[in-house]
Image (tube, rainbow, N blue to C red; front, side, top):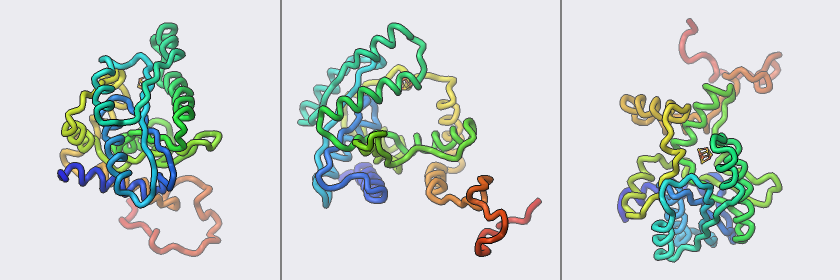
Length: 262
Ligand code: SF4
């Protein structure tokens, strides 16, 4: 097995096990956007399915919202040749939205997609929906929320739909986009770009460029950010819900300042 594949499967396996993402008899539907990340996720889950200690099945689906820059057929052909159970859904409400409000934002677009996703996945008989958000997305989201929305949060690796009828998982949480790009390239599959991914001058692109610049000097930046998300020292933040304001909790000597205060 190639090194890149080993790295990918180790990291996906680690996330799946740590966050109990996949369980016996699950039917996992992968949201396939046509890009490198979701295709990598699909291929990783297919490989893990064949060696996992639990039995689960994998299918994939794509929601057409009118934002792909090329026809999806070549990727559809690739999936067919791989024998992958794949559904392509043209979402008419999203396509109408594009006509009626061409400048709509991500909120509206995501809401339309979410509705379509639940409808498709229900028809596929799946109980788990896997999304291709990567370590880069988790870091970007963490920075975006901290810097622009005043909240310390990122994305949930596992969560449930409102009615709790679907488990939503993000098995690429530990996989960086360097890895998905190399792995997707090694597959030789025709990727389909989305118009939105090419936008510049957005908060997203600013944060991505910032991380890329910092990584030149600090190559483990994303790993460190992911570790920080899993190691929250609530006593050193400003949320009174987690502070011992009247000194009634046991003293925690390990929380004494590590560096002299200025
Ligand atoms: S980036 Fe584009 S496709 Fe993604 S939610 Fe926003 S508008 Fe929709």
